[in-house]
Image (cartoon, helix red, strand yellow):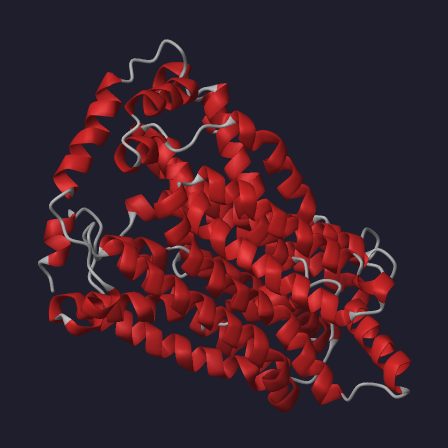
Length: 474
């Protein structure tokens, strides 16, 4: 809606909006949808696991084994994500942004087919392999699509376009939660279709991407194809757009960066003034993934059942989490430039810590109808505080702590740590929750307190500072 109200004179055209929708729906939707889709139908798919096991071996699967198997099914996307994120930088540097997005769609279609036919084939292994492959797809997408969105955007609106990726993630997560409701696709018959719908986003991108150009920056800076870069800009900005100034700006940036030698990953760990911001970047990523947010995004249905909320309402409460997630993401986009990054992160971590403690208290009180429904309050606030700070600030801080030569290596390490944290929580939460139940979130409360202390004493404020001022702090 915001983009559609911008004038063509500003360089925001129907062509640009088409390219934007291609990247958002075809790429960022894959990550968000497959993060949220596994949540609502958990019990139904677990029944499929159990029935498959009985058919094969003649007896039901042990509860502890089922918890571990389900945790692996959820978390295996993060293993794929780690692989995909490591491939993204290489692919973008060598092949540009358009080709990796184009060919990555075939991994999504393969994953959709595996997950969609897993029940018919009586194979939960197909579902797990499909989740792994869609993880690779998501890792590549989340490395490529945000770059594409930023590089095709008019300079004036680069910040807005850069945040569309995160908005695409939370919107598609909400979509998966709505479709996963028991009276829609979250049934024992239709859950394979629910998982397979991820292929629709790939088909959309395959249909649209041939009409969209490569990133003009890649064409000019990497390929030295000035005419093709100018044509791409004209397509994106409109036939009457004077591309000379923007072309000159990209050329100047390229010339300025020619003499900068790329920083290696080894140098980030061995050079003192690089190691300090790297430690901050790593801890910031861990503060996002070990905060407990994925215990909510992946397992809110299980969490609501444990709180005593009737199963027929858990789908709606999970959708409520998704709605809060989208609203607070939109709110946070306006907060980031008005308030400091550091203060927002502190508010987010502190609020999540308090909510975790309150949730532990409510989960361990004598169960009544009122207490059961009251647990919704700290869970929804937990998500709201997450989007206030930890949801987006770690990525802003990571990008701002390093100059152009060190940023690619730093972002690669940050991405790997982020996916590793994602995998750890996704895999471990069901087993830990089975052992200590309502006390699980006390672990997150302790971790959040540690991250809050680290942020308070070690993380600098970067708002309003240029890269030279920030790097001088180390």
